Image (cartoon, rainbow, N blue to C red; front, side):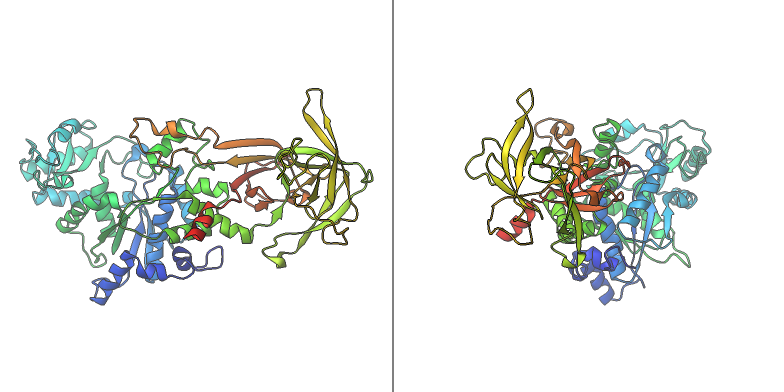
Amino acid sequence: MTADDGRTSAENVTGENDSTAAVNFIQARINEEQAAGADYTKVHTRFPPEPNGYLHIGHAKSICLNFGIALHNQGRCNLRFDDTNPSKEDIEFVDSIQEDVKWLGFDWEGRMFYASDYFEQLYRFAEQLIAKGLAYVCDLSAQEIRETRGTLTEPGQNSPYRDRPAEENMDLFRRMRAGEFADGSRVLRAKIDMASPNLNLRDPVLYRILRSVHHRTGDAWCIYPMYDYAHPLSDALENITHSICTLEFADHRPLYDWCLENVDYRSDVIVNRPRQIEFARLNLSYTVMSKRKLRQLVEEHCVTGWDDPRMPTISGLRRRGYTPSSIRDFCARIGVAKRDSIVDIALLEHCVREELNLLAPRAMAVLRPLKVVLTNFPAGEVQWLETENNPEVPESGTRQIPLTREIYIEQEDFMEDAPKKFFRLKPDGEIRLKSAYIIKCEAVIKDDMGRIAELHCSYDPDSKSGGATSGRKVKGTCHWVSALYGKPAEIRLYDRLFLKENPDDDSEGRDFKANMNPDSLTRLEHSIVEPALFNAAVGDRFQFLRQGYFVMDGDSTAEKPVFNRIVSLKDSWAKELKKG
């Protein structure tokens, strides 16, 4: 399979080559298993999202890891939706997850499954446990189960229903399925050990009664399996060899193994015993990665939606202008670890900036326009000047830009009372227009309120960039756009959504939303862009000279395009690399 930048997906997961996959601890374990004569013939992984929200950059790491391990070992990777909680699930999330995985460059090759595919088999497995005396129907409420679970230092208390006969449990469980009991009135629990030091083994709940319409099965079921029960058995039914998950599931692994040890799932076609392996989840600075908190931001209208370009969701990053290969590169660079840590968001920005420096054509856009009248430029005349499309890629060629009597420059490129080391335009000062001429400020025109309305400048016709010059040099160069040929555009400047490096830190007793950046979005509705951008399509990316990298947004209209800033030109991560 070839990804969007020409490299194979395995290469995109692991960097310029797949040596990273060869040395991370998960691949090292697979190598050891195979050297010892592994009991599986082909590595088989899965990416198992819950369809209760949009995927984020942390899921991208898991996608790259699961698909990457499979590709590196010439194996398979399934896409499976763990849809065991219909009260929070929606087909919208199913569709978005598929889109995100494909966009990142991965293909599940028709192996898309749902936990709900196995509801009948999971139910039969539960009856097996009841028949073996390893599961029982409990009438305690959820609160009572929590109260009798015990603590890290004290054992739990046996449920008064723990010793019900298997026949009674079977009858009650079947009646639970038939809908005879109210929601929450009974659960099916595993009978393991209420004194276990691992709280997950203290008779965990396997099934609960929940009357909620399922996005696939409708109202066919009123009991649903718990994740810790459905997950290992779904893995087994799909012949998964390696169940790769994040560190918070390490304490759940004994329960994962208990389910596999006590259920008779093997058959002529189901032969593998899945192995759960945990890795450190991705935590990104100035970002929240909790799906619950991201959902809260959406539902409380703190952002415009799941695809808001400030969100760490894959759809948000896509709309922001990030490329699939830059995200895969980021995931390869951070590697696979066994301990949680916070990754600097500057590294993610560095990855897309490094790629776009080579791929993005240059363009001129004036974000905060200041009119300049070239008083000695003939009225009605237009000069078409040549400028490069990308100096990093000479073969990308050149384009023509129009120079007219009236142009716009950035407001910040002029200062009336300029300090000594201000090398842009000032009264009686000179500056070069990019790919054009040197101009000199002759007069500052103000409105009735005393605000600068326009500048009157002269241009030196002998100072054309790239041609015969007067031999004079100036220290400053600015970008510009013709007032006659330029087009109005809206520019959206996005910044980090949170001011605090770790917004989840509640040591001060503050809600995470109190750390939100009030200036995370600045809208500039009166910007001017050069003609080369008129035919841009949604998703096209550019470097606006001296401003950063931008992408055309889906809110664009024929009359007024909208551009989102992906990242600025400043690269703090590159500076850190140089220091190192």
